[in-house]
Length: 133
Image 1 (cartoon, rainbow, N blue to C red):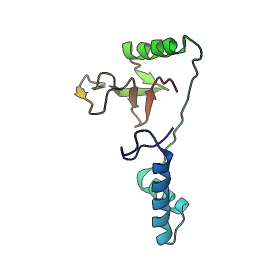
Image 2 (image 1 turned 120 degrees about the horizontal axis):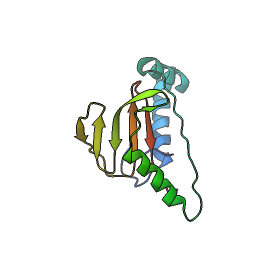
Image 3 (image 1 turned 135 degrees about the vertical axis):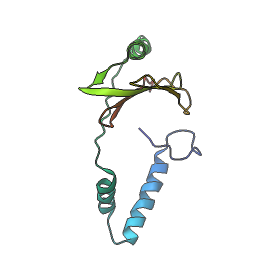
Image 4 (image 1 turned 135 degrees about the horizontal axis):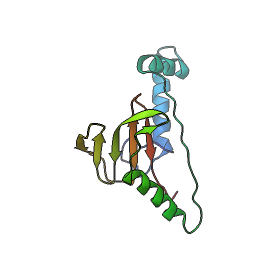
């Protein structure tokens, strides 16, 4: 899915991630550790996490319309829970707003995009992003 560490590449570019990986590996090697040792240290300090990406295909001439209808449904009626967890804040990047469960609205600094992101009570989040790729 790509990493964009700095904006000198105008697209997500794996070479940036590779350079950072090599830098981190060299740092831990200088301490007599492996990259896996360093990763374990980071997990112990900042916590473990799980990530899962689910990509759905919408082929054919009506695929973009189907994707648009789905994200519109989420935009029109925000879920209260996802996977049994309460949604505590929602971000709508097309409107550049974040809304908390108690109704507080703030402006997002990121560029506008057709993305919805829901933050859950346990700190996890779910993002919905239609894509033509």
